[in-house]
Amino acid sequence: MNEQKVKLVADIGGTNIRIATAKSQAVLDNITLYSCKDYNGLEQVLREYITQYNLTGCSIDACLAIACPVENDLIKMTNLPWSFSQEKLKKDLQFNQLSLINDYTAIAYAVPLLSAQQKYQIGGGTVVSNEPISICGPGTGLGVAHLIPTRDNQWVSTNGEGGHLDFAPVDDIEIDILCYLRSIYGRVSYEQLLSGIGLEQIYHGLSHREGKKTLDYTAADISNYALAGSCELCSQSLVVFCRVLGSFAGNLALMMGSFGGVYIAGGIVPRLLSFLSDSDFRARFDAKGRFSDFNRDIPTFVITEKHPGILGASAYLHQGY
Image: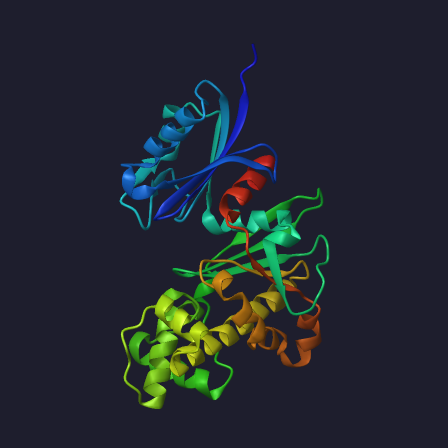
């Protein structure tokens, strides 16, 4: 009797783990959420899933998207006290194949699979097939990735640390925020504005600029008060956040010629769709001087799919990496 073949995918964050089986590249089954705090390590979670869905004895190819560096055999998670050997994990769980990829690599591979219902377009532009795609995502930090098409109709993800590019202010308000942040950090990257702590630092910078008392607001507080219209300084902070995000996304488009689209991921922006649509995000994306027409043809999207990490892990597996 032939062994049942299973493709197992997971998205491993610092708080939760999502695991699923991939029936095809874009079809996931048995999606299950686990809380990291309930387990002593990754192997324990994977074993529970395998037992729960009667996968013991199957030939399992696995791809795990994880929010930490994956280049070495020994994996030390950034936001969890977990560490493990890739080779030992593969052997102990008797996987036929095990691939670990960075979480933003996974999100990148998910993009070509997104339907119209899994993304939200802001502004104009039309996707051009088989052209580079750029992704950025404000969250705990600022993730950046790019997808390059290959001649055999597949994709290759190129990753780096694009979120740590030098912040370039566009107007006087942003210059003042830069000066405020330079007094704290010396060097200021885009991540210092385009992240959870970044939104807080924009708020602090504006408070300093206007000589107002800084209240102890979190990024969630600032967003909520801005959306409710109950705090003018919070609203202004979110306005600046959207403008800077537009400028940064437009820079990615210029660098890569991202005629396949620029996609915004992460935990912050999907909750701000209406605000972002009404903001200067797209105007800033286009405002590139002599190259404004270049960017105007490039579409921008917010990823609204709830599980892009496991979707991208599935795409990675099915491409045969």
